[in-house]
Image 1 (spheres, one colour):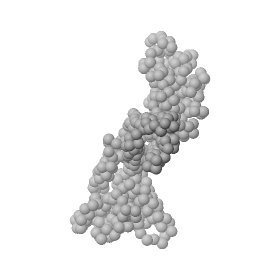
Image 2: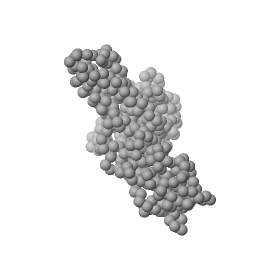
Image 3: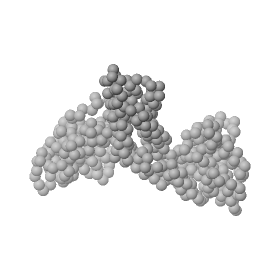
Image 4: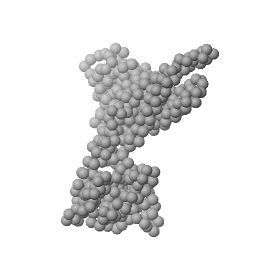
Length: 465
C-alpha cells in the first residue's frame, strides 16, 4: 500500500491521549529492539537487547545519557509472534503527557517515524496475522459501546465470519475448476462438472448469502444502536418519559403543547444492548410552520425506528383514540404496524387503570408515570426482550456496510449463474459470473483488494492501533 512503508520502524502512543496513570508507546519494525537498546537501561541486571527473549517484560529506566525520562516496563515480542508479525516493543510509562512526548521525541531522534492511523493493524494484515474482515473487527471492537456490539466484534475478529466466507469461496473454486477443465476439452464435448451438483451448490450458496444479507439489518442496529422512536400527541409526556428512561434532564418539559419541535436523541445501554432513543414532536395538525417541520421529521424518524413507543395520556385518551392513531402507523406495503409498544402515561393522576386496554392482545401495553418514574423498568425489560427474540446466537451476523455490499454483489452473480444454467449457456460464460462471485467474496477477506479500499478501511483506525 503506497501510503505505508513496511520496511520502516514505526512508533506511536497506543493508549488514549492525555494524562493517566500509565501510557503505552508501541514500536514495530526491524529496528525496534536495536532502538530501545540505545535508551533503555534495565534495573539490577545487564543484558543486550539482541539477546532478549520474546514475550518477556523488563523493568528499567529510559532516557538519553544521564538524563532519565522515566522508569518504565518494556514488553518484548519477536517476529513473527507479535500483534503485527514484526519485532515489537511496548513501553509502559507513567501517564504524564510530558513523559509521553519526551519518549516519542527520543524515538524520532533515533530514526523511527510516527505510525499512521491503523498502520500497526495494517502490518498485521500484510503479515497474515488475520484477514481484512478480522482487521476491520479490531476497529469495531475498539468502538464497541455495548455488550452485544462487543460480542459481535469479538466473533468476527476471531474469524467466525471469515471461515464462513472461506468455505463458500472454496466450494466455488473447486467447482469452477471443473468447468474450466471442460473448456480445455471443449472439442471432445466432455462434461466434468455435474450440472445437478452445481444446482445444489447454487441452492446452498444462495441460501447462505441470503441469510448473511438479511442479518445486516440486525447487525447494523446492534453496532450503531437500536433506534427507538417515542411518539404520540402533544403534551402526553414524551419528553418526561425520555428523561425518565435516560435518568437525566435531556429534553425540555413543559405543559405547553408543541414544546418539542425537533427530534432529540440520546443513547443508553440496557441489558447489553445499545438503544438510541428519539423524542419527537407531537403528532397533530398545526399551522405553525416550525412545528409542521418538526412533525414531518417525526414521520421520518418513525420510518427509521426499529421499535416505536406510542405514548398516550391515560387520563384523557380513550381506547378508540389509541386504536385510530395505530391505524395511521401501519406500513403501506404490508398493512402491518411497526414494532409497537403502547405506553399509557400519567398514571399518577389516576385512581385506577382504564378499562378496555386489556383488549390490546397483539401489542404490549405498559402503564407508567414518567413524572414519578414508576414502571419505567418495565419498558426497559420489554425492549431487551424484543431484541433478544430477534438475535440468534448460532448465526453469523453482518454489521459492516462494505461486507453487506460485497455479499449483495456475490448473490447477484450467483443468480446470474443459475439463470445461465437454466438457459444452457456455454461453460465459458458460466465461469465469468462464478469469477465475479469469487471476486466479491474475496473483497470481504482481502484476498482481492485495492490500495483505495485498504486506505479507506485503515484510515478509520486511531493512531497507535
